Image (cartoon, rainbow, N blue to C red; front, top):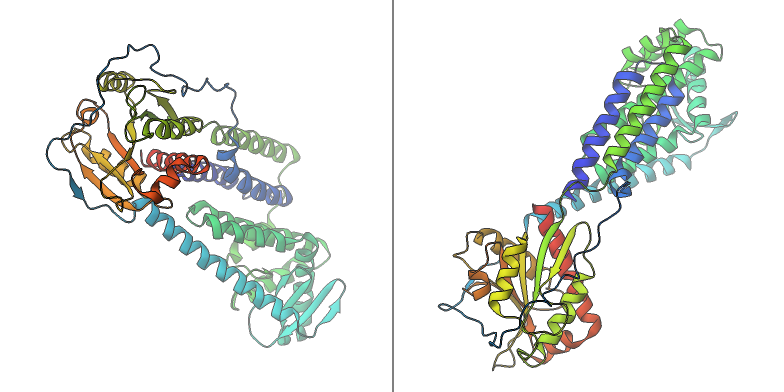
Length: 469
């Protein structure tokens, strides 16, 4: 998600810079309009299109330790001291930020629909027709503005014939060009991508270009350019238009008058600039849509026990099913390597050596718990506080435990010096997913569909860990 935000901000910023430098002051209004609309949409979609010219390498999830020599040593868990529970955070930073994003987006969507319903309410009033325009007279002093073929205008303005003639012709252009669709489109993008500063700049550019189009076509219809310029200045003294509408007024009056009187550049000049824009934008699109440049999170998953060591009840088979399901999810974001992909016995030493040899970003040993007290249930994780990566291990453990809470109760994260954690040189943890001695947990752990759900939730946790890197 962080990668996506970064790439969209960069690509949208570059695209807007191309517009600002090459198109903003050109009277290629229709091209400018479609450039702004298409580039905004494609820049937001590009990072998930993943255009790639390189074939993906084979998945490494099938690598196992089958060639390793089996040793007849019991996989007893070594704990130094009494494991002490640490307080786990109920909310990770990413979840807090996600909550803030959702709240702001909901507020913006609420504002959007509030404005939309307000306009719909205005359209229910009595109106008169001038061509395709439905004229709705209002008593407020806002500038004239249009929504599709509805024109909202102050009653007094209609009595000023030169002013009203310019307004009606101007708004007729907005109606014929369907500028309302552009406004709705960019407003909806703002509700979702409000965090991207260039979306706000795009909104201003789109609305300004609408006014340039309407001004140009209004003057071309036969209205005197000097009279029309005075009308623009007069409109600037009034309040702003109704939200979500295309309006005769625009705050940047100076820009409109300058553009109105500016001569159109030569055909060759316009052709060169448009060609440059297309080439530059194609390059921006290609770079922003290229395969995710961030390295995948490399994870070694160890299915506990195996072979002659069955663990608790049928623990070795349960964790093997889950790890194999998890390995099947390995992709360009999370690359998973298994210590074993079938039922075989591996020593703790072999497992530790395998981890150190592959130097993953995270080592995860998966187990099922057991207790004489059959009422005890839930998921818990262990990390070694003496490991040089203990801070990362604790953080990763909290994330993975949290992602299991739809199926299990949380027993938190605890400190312990397991052999594998003590003898590996990477962030690592042991995850005990439920108690086989508890009826509720056992039902979940032995259910094939639930095992797949556990694997998916572990993968989602690994994705969150990757985003933090």
